[in-house]
Length: 111
Length: 110
Image (cartoon, rainbow over all chains, first blue to last red; front, side, top):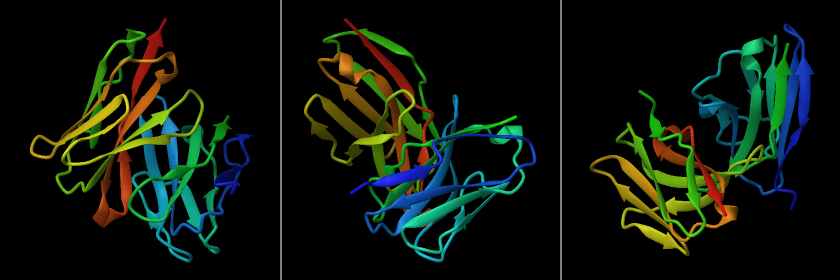
């Protein structure tokens, strides 16, 4: 099992550009999450999904959209990137309620 | 007030020392509790769950006090390899999301 994978690992965007981050898991987990981690802030939940075809807002959803068309994939989109979205983005999945398995992260810089 | 608060540290301790981390949470509806470990520039990984009766895993002991909304992690006989950031996590089951503390950084020195 590859576990949770994220694509890309690094990206630099200019303000106003768009991009999509891909998260994939091969553990047949129902729940998937997108977090951002900033210095001194800990991980903050952006959006999450409790199953294929469902999504919900987390703590800091503004400026992001998500889709879960297939159970194994959870996509995070930035329609118009802003410098405030410079962060490390982590995807996670869980069968439900307990341990979350994290991907290796995507380091995004918006200039 | 943050939902989950931790002392950011850093804690610098010698090998073999005992060190304790504390965490408080604000939402009394929190149902499950965890400690995660995060190495520099890596993803978080589960260290241990925290049960109401307290639980131990080798050199690590976790305690939960629901009345005071307080969680602790004790590390005995610290090793160099314990150097990392320790994240306190609470799960509000009804919201299907977990809330993370900002982490406590530990450095164990020879």
